[in-house]
Image (cartoon, rainbow, N blue to C red; front, side, top):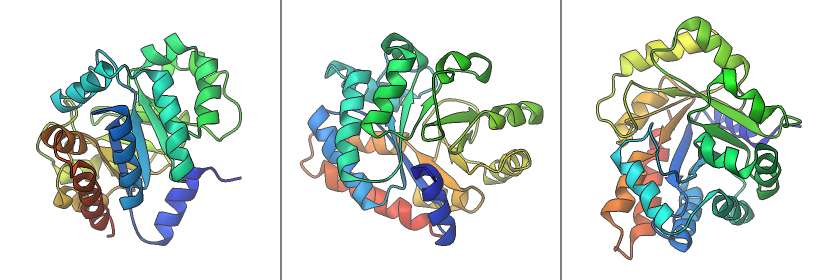
Length: 266
């Protein structure tokens, strides 16, 4: 049986569309507001939701996501909260939900307990930012079946041989980082992204989604022309940060999703 992620990419391919993958920190700015935002973003056109587990030391993230994580932590959000939120989101939408975390919260929760709780909540996979393939068996050895994906990151500096190794142990899709640096840093080189995407395609059949530094509809269209999906995080979190007290916050996010989604229809 096809899982939700595979089904989504298959359907999008038939429609000649690319996936809009949206990241938000769970619980930012508050748990209830965060749920409202996420549900409306899903309704507005997200194809895949990346739900960020707030962490005190998010080393791969730029200042915008670091601050969103801090706001969520101040609300008392932890992995248990994120799983509860996942279950509520799953009641409303059937799009794939990927939990985006550093390894520490999962390790503290217990890897087997995390796997069971994540599946029960309706999550479709996890992306663990700081867990290299060589050290991930501890987590994945207790997984069964193909209904929970491990999404892996590939950097623009990753050699071909290592790309193949990473792809071999991945499922769902591969997250290709558009450039070196942290999330939200400016400047996109579409030619370079195309080159890295083609190289990665030579070693995998999995869909390739590109993220880091994508903020405008033009960026989305450019990346969608070479990849299977576009990942946006900092641009959404920047909107939240800039409109924290605006009663129209939810609508602002939904409108941005619609604009980005339109740009994925290549």
